[in-house]
Amino acid sequence: MTGLIDDDRLLDVLETETLLLAASAAGADHDRPVPACPGLTVGETARHLGSVQRMVVSWVRTGRRPVGWEREPGPGADVEDWLRDSLRTLLGELVAHHPDEPCPTWHPGQQDYRFWRRRMAHEATVHRVDVQSAANGGGHDPIPQDVAVDGIDEVLAVWFTQRLAELGVAGTRQATVVVRAAGHTWLAEMGVDRTSAGPVSPLAAETADAVVTAEPALLYLWLWGRSAVFDRAVRREGDMDAVAQLWALLRLATR
Image (cartoon, rainbow, N blue to C red):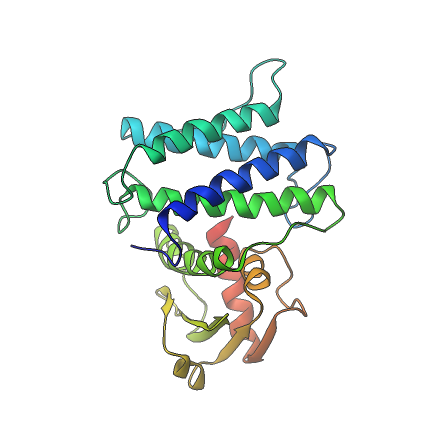
């Protein structure tokens, strides 16, 4: 699958966001909690991202999904430097392979290096916001619009559609919600046996149970649970129970 932004742009995002997270963590109290993720701290977020990046490298190189992949920096090691080393290794691996080249992933329909370029770019972006929000009392650097739009597509197509199917989780009732941002429209469909989401014509909003609209960065973070289900910055029309079901299902998918 090809995302909404260029493959090389995804590598730039991965590098920029990881380095920004490392710099933000270096100037913050590592024990400071992340507001939107109870139980997670600044230091743990930096360590988690480095662990995920190292896990991906191991997976694509060996063909085996690592078990017990969470890692810790060595004794006396600085977690930010450890994260930067993780980034360098991951970038080297991704740059060495064409995006279309096959490799193992957790998505059966996207078994190529492009999946990891996109997935890790958004992993870094969301956690960068986590760290900055914790360090700055809720404030964070902006998310570029193209990154946010692609991230909306990724969380709906990869997490809401595929991850929930893997978990065997579906809705409690039939409902449809249109998601709109920056001229793009997606339709999320929920039922008692399946969930799915993907791009649609703007006309789909006419028959959907509810419509959710916001600026791309706000909507991106809302879908990732970085704001409340009824955040006032996100405009909602129609069936609020359908909106709440979408948000709750995404919390299960992305936890």
